[in-house]
Amino acid sequence: MSESNPHVALVTGGIGGLGTEICRHLARAGKRVIAADLAARAERIDAFRAEVAEFSDAIVFEPLDVSDHASSGATLADIQSRHGPVSILVNAAGITRDTSLRKMSEQQWSDVITVNLDGVFNTCRALIDGMTGRGFGRIVNISSVNGQTGQFGQTNYSAAKAGMHGFTMALAREVASKGVTVNSVSPGYCETALVMAVPETVRNDIVSRIPVGRLGRPAEIARVVEFLCNEDSGFITGANIPVNGGYFMDF
Ligand code: CAA
Image (cartoon, rainbow, N blue to C red; front, side):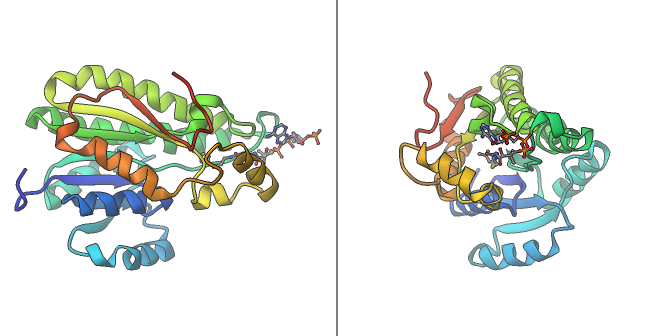
């Protein structure tokens, strides 16, 4: 893709803590970026526009509910008809409904599964044929360290995030020969609203167990996502890249 005809990148959860920084990094790397998120977050949308004002030509907001299969398919078709084909997809939409399983309602279970896991199916299903047909695509799914380790109070979230990486590996195999890579990034605890909502004593205990000694910065996640989305990253697929300050190490 040339400078005059840049790749179009779509970031779900695009106005969130990690999503905003991912949009900025992709815009800085020369992509045209669509920050897709719930239209209902009106105040946050205004704040987001201010935060990315320096990239106002490169980043646009589009309403999208990833949890709704029918409407998300139609919305993504409409977005592509107006902005051009999406060749980079970052699934960063995610919510928590933390509580121990013995107290968890069916609603708290399904809210998390439909946004965090069904949402990945919905966006990938809608965009994959375009990417394979054009012979190029980059998909990055934002999973979590808590999908790798499990976390007290997160049976729903940990299941969804572990499921995301299973999805990543399976889809990576299906589309590898068509120029499309599919990878996961698993952030640890970062400076986002999601993490700041964890009770302070619990959060402090978690931070005390991060070898780097602090929460991660959204930019430290975004630079890994940008790296995976680069045209030159075509030999990395089906991988999970942990970015967690050493909180969970494995091989
Ligand atoms: N480990 C062990 N025991 C714990 C515990 C823990 N982490 N947390 C609570 N308990 C104990 C309590 O001391 C209490 O014990 P008693 O019954 O003896 O008093 C009992 O378990 C509480 O159990 P409950 O069923 O009442 O738990 P709860 O429904 O109140 O939920 C919680 C507790 C709110 C989930 C709390 O544990 C918590 O906030 N945990 C952290 C969750 C977390 O880290 N979320 C991450 C959000 S950010 C994110 O997800 C981003 C990312 O990807 C990293």
